Length: 464
Image (tube, rainbow, N blue to C red; front, side, top):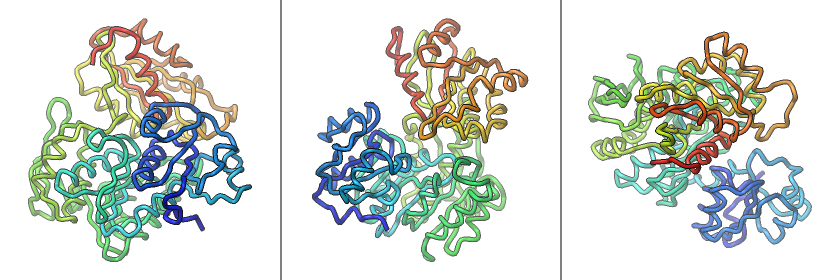
């Protein structure tokens, strides 16, 4: 059984892998609760620099002495037991808490605790929820797996009634959360280094829905057969949303403007809840907004204020985020790293005015690239030009049987103009040698591909 963070109030919590999106937010969260916080990561980053600006000591590199004097260790699923800091903590008898156990402990006891799960759309939906609840006069405690300018980062310590957080299915980590409201945006193939197949993934979501108490709610995208099945069979209240006639909450009179931004009237079982207009484009964002409206209705929020919040929502960082206009080319970055998410980003990009549409993809993990190989080959049809960097192994060692070059022949057979540019320097040089003013570039991946965009924006002729 995991140690409980509240047993160490006033002590020092040391985060291994503190630069991660979720971990950096949790570190700041504990600091606000009065803990002394330190941490370490393999490399320095903007997140570690921001933490240091807040007075949190961050060590670059993992070393046994970093944990000396710590009261408790917090680590993510990517940090193995043989990590020198975890191994030293074990030798010294310092209690350790995995990141998801910590989130579950933090959210326990909140009457309205929303866990946003699903293969795609978690960060956007959680961010929309956060902004909607806050603008509607509720002060929720928030933990997002990305950064939202509206709350000044990835976490917000609010009141004791509402808790909003992402609930990721990787390693079945969301089964350690304590939701009273569970949102399921979709159920798709991913993390097949952990799950056997899509049925195994669905079974994990069944267990997640079972965490909700009988008087709680499961909210799900009703047009997704698997999400709908989990929702309707949960032993609690349920609400579905989507376009299909069988969905409880639907967008009546749905239209999109020239840039793909939706306007609609939300109706719940035929009852009009309000008119909504979004500032972020695509059907995916519209569906995420429907999930937010469901939760807001259950919570009893003022729908006019929710509509105002959704109209003002401009997205979380790294979710089709404009990073620069360089050489007259609009450069975006997007966190999407599996086929459905990349297709959605390219669909959004294709609706923007552009000349050549450049797609730059950093494949993330060898296992995902192998297991979804055929789907990735079918992902980039909307791109005029595709540059593929080396695969980012992240938590995985290179097995030697999968490389970016292996994607070229099947992609080209589909008519995709694809090349491999191994490094960010090589990628930037290729882009600058070939793109023209009026083009659009979007980079894809959940690794460090956003550093390419930073590199491009820092190298001259850049206008935001």
